Image (cartoon, rainbow, N blue to C red; front, side, top):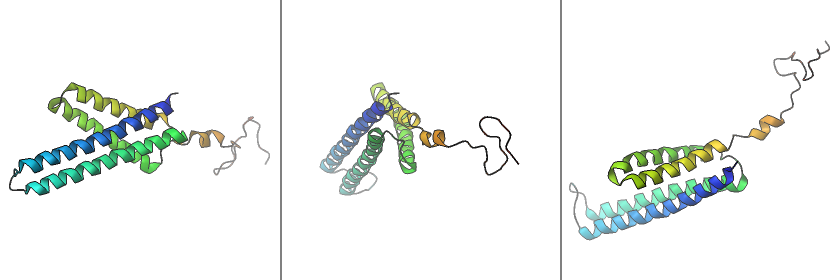
Length: 158
């Protein structure tokens, strides 16, 4: 299966998106700062600084998601519990942003968000949680419940 290339592409796309989000929020902060306008009595400088902080935090969040996917691609292993939770939250964020972007930005933005969502979900689904450990367990037939038959079906001696 092509799980490694999907994880690689997903990591690259998330990293590009992280840089794009950070630059977009930097630009929006500059616009708010240059306009010197107030929104409901808020300080314009506080709005521009909060825009820069929010863009940086969201960019770091997406970069961390990209790192988790990159690590999964390099090691060819499923992400750990924290990584899975982070990628699931990124999938939910992209689904919501895709739904909002249809009306606000247009269909191309929706298609991009759904493509990123697909890459994240495919990476999560493609990597099974430790399939080798389940396949390598010896089946002796004498589990904790006791009294199981061995693999060849012969009865156990008493």
